[in-house]
Structures are given as structure tokens and as C-alpha cells.
Amino acid sequence: MSSALSRPARRSRMSLFASERSHNDEVWKGYERIVGFDTLPDAEDSVSGNASYTLQVKAKGYARTKHTRTFMCAVDATESSERALEWIMHNLVDDGDEIVAVRVLDWEQDYVDQEKARIGARSLLSSIVELNKASDADRKISVTVEFLTGPIKSTILELVRMYRPQSLTIGTRGKQVSALQKMLGSTPLGNLSKSLIWQSPVPVIIVRPEDRIQKHLFKRLADPRRQEYMQLVQNDKLPLSRPHD
Image 1 (cartoon, helix red, strand yellow):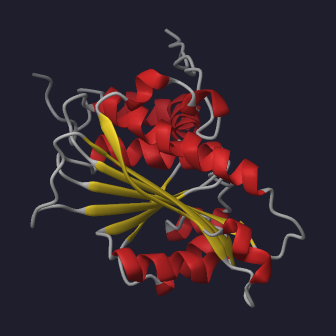
Image 2 (cartoon, one colour; image 1 turned 180 degrees about the vertical axis):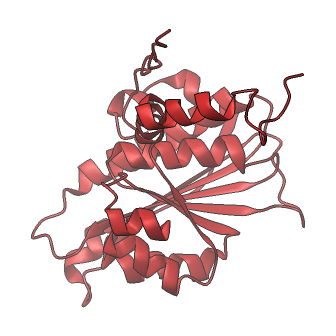
């Protein structure tokens, strides 16, 4: 009897940087703004060209204690960042914790649209608030968003040293794994991910895209060699087979 493997329907997603998010007043109910900094206009006048746009909100009733943990996530405008943030919210964050989301705009670009960066930061902030409400409506957290210009790796590491988070989480696009990598059990990572793993003073968590994990799982389950093996080990006549309950 052949078994059909049905793939779960992929849920629709709104980009973390969609401007529609920050204009929704319902998102901000139960939250209050703490502080914000904007040095983007000064970027051209600085020697390094570095600048930042910082936003921070906290849930009403939030209080930082000795048990407060800080989790940092490095993001960009890709779906892998959405997965990483969702993973943090569902698996790490607890009541009283702090989230720091960081996006570094490459300083080697000739032009950085300042207003677009501000809109992106506000949209990212509202996205994290929405994720927290969806995960646990009663969970009170603090959220900080940092948009910066500068060299990506060194800027992220500088923020890690400044915030001293429990961990740094980044998403990966889930590139194809070579035969050698499969044998070694290694995960394909970009140069930035590898550098952060080696140089970060805190643990680095790599979140693989869920859809690629599911694709790999279904491919394994559909492998005829695996099905033949399962039929073989389920044979009661084999001396090493386990008896059925």
C-alpha cells in the first residue's frame, strides 16, 4: 500500500518591515515608549560615517529584575530573519525579558535612505510587539530596535559587548548541503554567520528555515530505501525485531 505524504499548507506572512504594521494603533495598546535616539542626520559629518536609529518600548507594568534576560537577534530584510525572531519569541522569551533586534546597513553603500530606515525600524518594532502578543498576550517584555550604519560584523559584535545578551540569534537561508557536509554533520553557513560564531563572546543560535527542514524531512520519508528498511525491521520473523505491543 503506497502512502501519500501531504505537505502542510504554508501560512501567509507579512514582512517584518511592512509599513502597514507601525500605523496600526491596536499594536501599541498596552505598551509605552521608553527612549529613542536618531543620529542618522549626523552620519555624513562623522569621520567613520557610522550612525544609528534606536527605538525602545516596554509593556505597561514591565519591570527589570535580577532575573531579566536579554536576547539579541540580528535581522535583515529576509524571511530567515522572520523565522529567527519567531523562534526566539516561542522558545526563549519569558515574562520580564528583553529583546534587542539589530539591523546593520552596510556602510559601503553609496547612499542610505534615512527615512526608509526609520520606517523599517518602526515596522520591525511593531512586528516584535505583535509576535509577543500572539505568543503570550500577558507576557510583559521590553523591546529595543537598533538600525545602524557601519561594517556589519564589527557593529554586531560591538552591540553584543554593549548589551551583554544571553545569546545572539541569526537566521540562515538553508543552503544546499554537500555530500561531505552531510558526512561531517555540518550546516552550511555564510561567512558572516561563521565569523559571529567564532568571535562572539556569547552563544550564537542559528535558526534554519522551517520550510526547508520540512522539505528535507518529507524527502527522507519518501526515500524508497528508507521505506524498505522500515518494512524490514518491522518483520516479526527477524531475530532482532522488537515484538509488537
